[in-house]
Every structure is written in structure tokens, then in C-alpha cells.
Image (cartoon, rainbow, N blue to C red):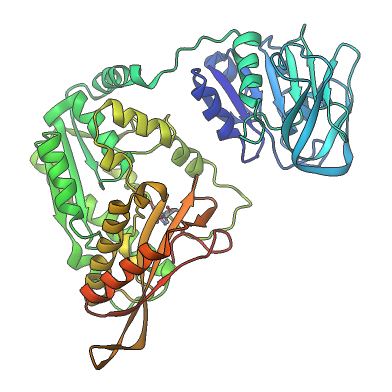
Length: 512
Ligand code: XMP
């Protein structure tokens, strides 16, 4: 495996994903990991990520200097490069000017890590500081106009550094550099393949569960569906799946999910808890978005917990709680960033500790794209794997302000038409996420010869890679017109349709 040490940049996970895509398992750990923990992991190589700090700054994230002497090849990227530079006795200085964006890299010598690159290459830079001097036993391999030491290596000590980001698409030869490091410097074996995984994971689940029963909440989303499918393959009818219907789901959603689990996957225990009344009652009169989220989060846990207790009484052997946690979820909840401000509180299911159920998370080591590939291997149909994300609080955060039965009914119909037309026209797969939101403001319209006074609907379709940023989807006007006509003609209570053309940031994808 290749160990990625996280120095606080946004790039650590991208690096690990790139390494996995190249066929070698990779894990991200905090930069202050101990030597003995590294020993336990036994990495073939270590990559030090970028980060927003300066190595000479007070409180800059550091690592144990002895990591450099473990005789494990190390590649430092950006901040990681500067850290190696500093730890080996070189000089790191603020650059004359900050470099940000595409730059030309001039190769002096390929050495080991720049093998296969042209004399000039486009690279992506994002830094203020730079390594200005290195001890004599280090060789400078490349530079840019403003950065003399843009790549270096010490082949004897197996230390390598690049100032630019090899892990991003704007560095077209970045993968070649990572390959050089992983396979040439570290001599890692290419043995990470999704298609071999189901068998291995099934074996691990059986070993852990040992004939006990597992209970799991499913939503019909990609993660929980793939996790449940995997558990089902391992333990069959010993799996109890619970779908909490909070009433804030989309039209036909329950039927589709139930049908999939029962008919396509032959689950014997797919239990639906209809709690829509409870949720609607508790949301009655509540307008504030965070309050709505809080109420839904709490009610969800309460309802699910009630079902678990009921099942526990009936079937004494329930010992495990299955969860669809994936790798990024784990990182986010373990180390919430000190500096990130809370924009919206997303809720994931966590049960109180006194429930004494052991958590089993078969997808905890995988990224989203890997979960999709795993789902494909498990024959989960594309219509589930390619589904747009749907937030935990469901339609409640797409009905701005107070949620009422009337508004829910309208929104379900509208959303259904929008998504149906996007699917028919092929635009569903082009968008990262699409949905309708109800703006509880009434405007005047005219229908037939009569005046109407009804709600506004806003349609939102976005393109994105990871939901961190998003752009509005450029859907043809003719298609929007047809969708708008259908909505106004077919759904009572709406007389005006808008298309949202805001980007994230400054807007967010959802409305609340
Ligand atoms: P925003 O609105 O923050 O949304 O741009 C980013 C992505 O997160 C989804 N989202 C949620 N997912 N629970 C979830 O599981 C939540 O509470 C939640 N809120 C937003 C949103 O749909 C988008 O894909």
C-alpha cells in the first residue's frame, strides 16, 4: 500500500484516489502518525500531501523527522516537498510571487520520478513558499520561470519532491509521475482491483458476523444499497433491512426501492416503517432550515431505534448494525475541520452507545466511485448506481419554509415530471443532480380566462464533480419550456416555473 500523509490540503484524498486508480491500495492518515503505526501499515511508499500552511509558521503541521530515515521511498507534493526540503537541511522561503494555475515545467533531467516526461510540460501550481536551496546530495530535476527547484530527488535516500500538483487533471503527466514513484521507486505491486473485492469482503463479513443477525437502515441511495447487497450476499436472510418512510421521499420512491430489494435481490426481510405522520406533525409550523434538519435527524433516530428494539425483542440474535459509511464520511466525522464554518448540518445515522450493537461498515474503506464499481460487480442495476444524490431530510429542504401536506403533494408531482423529462431526453445522466423546489410565494397568473394565484416552482439541475462546487446545467430552452408547460398544465397549485442559474459557491445546491 501507499500511505498518504495529510497536511491539511484538499488534495490528500485526490492523491489516494489516483493511486488506487493506478491499481495500488492507498490510505490517508494524519501527518502526525507515529512510527509504530506506520510500521503496522507497512507501506511500500509514503506521499506527503500539500497543505495551506508555511513550514516555518508557528503551529505548521509537521511529521516525525525519523520518517525520512525509515528507508521507505517518500514523495513530497507542494507543502510536502517543502517539508522534506526543510527537514533535510535545505531552505524554504516565501516565493517572490505566489504561483497559482497552469505553468510550464522545464525538465533538466528526468531522474527517476520524471521519467517519460517531455522537456516542457504543463503543470498545476498553487503555492506561496518554495524550496530555495537543498543539500548537495539532492539533485534538481526541473524548474519553472519563478521556481528554481520545482522537482528534486535523492535517489540514495529515496526522497523525491515536486512543487506542483501531480494529482490533478491540470498536470497532464501527473499520472506518469505517480506511476514512476509507485512502481519504479517503491516497487509496489498492482493488486488493487475492484472486481476481486466482493469475494474478499463477503468472507470478511462472514468471519465478523459469525451467524448473528444484522440490522440495517436503507434509503435506496447508492451507499446503503451496495452495503446491504454485500451483507445480503454474505449472510442472506440473517440481514434485516429497515426503510424509514419519513413521508419526505419522492413519488413512487418507496415502491421502487421495495421492489428492488424484494423482487430483484430476493431480500426476505425488507421492513418499512411508515412514520410520515410523526415527521409531518413534528415539522408542523417549523420554518427555520436548521430546525427542520434537527427535528428530522432526531425523529429518524428515534423511529429507527424503536424498530431495532422491537426486532431485538423478537430475534435475540441481533448483534450488528450495518451501515453504508464510505471512506470520506469516516474522515469527515473523525476530524471535522477546525476552520470550516458550518453551512448546513448533514445528518448521518448514529445510534446511542447503550444500544450495544456492533457497527459493521463493509464500505468504510472505499471512495464513491469505487462503491459504484463494487455495485456493478454485485449486479446492482444502473438505475440505482447512477441515481442522483438525495439529501437525508428529503423534500423538506426543498419546500422552503413550512412543510405542509399540500406543498409536499405538489412538489412530489412536479419533481416527478422534471426528472421523467430529463431521463427521456438524456439530460438526467449529464447532470450531477436535478430536482424541483417549491417557493411558498404565490403569484398571479391566468389560466383559461380565469385568474390564478399559486406557488412558484424553481427547477435546479447542476453539473459537479464532488458537490463542493457546482455549475448550473445548460439544459436546452426548448426542453425547459416543455417541462414548464407540463408542470403548469398537470399540477394543480403551480402557475410559474423558474430555472435556477446560480453557481455554487456562492449559492449551494440545495435551498436550505
Ligand atoms: P449543498 O446544498 O450543501 O449540497 O450544496 C451538497 C450535496 O449534499 C447533499 N445534501 C445532503 N445529503 N444529508 C445528505 O445525505 C443532508 O442533510 C444533505 N444536505 C445536502 C445535497 O443534495 C448535495 O448533493
